[in-house]
Length: 311
Image 1 (spheres, rainbow, N blue to C red):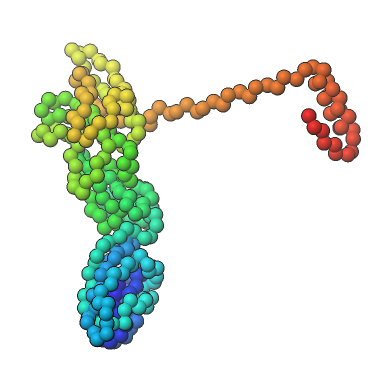
Image 2 (cartoon, rainbow, N blue to C red):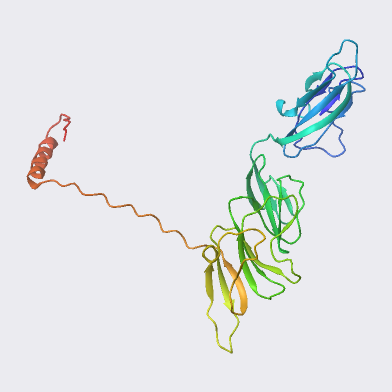
């Protein structure tokens, strides 16, 4: 916020946090001088800094009429803080030049699915710790993904099925029904940056997403319909072994030739076997030396003095 202290006072700049308000109560954000005027104001939920350009009114002997100011130089204080003097001369215009990243440090974010909103109050699903340019990936049942920031004012789709912190190096695994061939295909791909919704299943009408996973090594179980009255055994497939990571536009590999009844994600992959430490080699000690050491130990047990032996 930038304001003028009274009709002829200094131009003040401040950054402050509002942790709570009382309904119908008026809060004075200036020094309280009569006829103070707000010249610039923005609200940044994630504490983003910004750079502005200040244009001063021409005055005699005033040589520098314009300058830039970075809000990141100011500490975030309380709502009642007076602020710092940014200029002693009247301002003609203030324009935002560039919006910066969050200056609040890492923030822990949760998602409350009852209201479909993000929060920092530990309600709902924990999404992760976010800072600067970190993104959230949202995947919908309609076969789209989109990336967004961690602004608490974000809105989300009703058919949302996955929301988590984006790891750009972790592939997405998806199984979908192709609307044209009426067969299931599986694909694995890395998320490509985009400001818009991205379709990752077939564009053919009738195509639909069956299953999606952000696990590193997902495993699925396929249940088949009976073949001529005979039961067909279930099949487990490790998707990382079944198909490599390909481009986003790739169609993928056909999942199976059989008639699929149901596809389920096995939540827990096969646990890794703990590494077994190699046994330590035993020291080779000849019997004569061993007997000598035993005698020394026996003698030491009877002595009160501490003796240090070097072997």
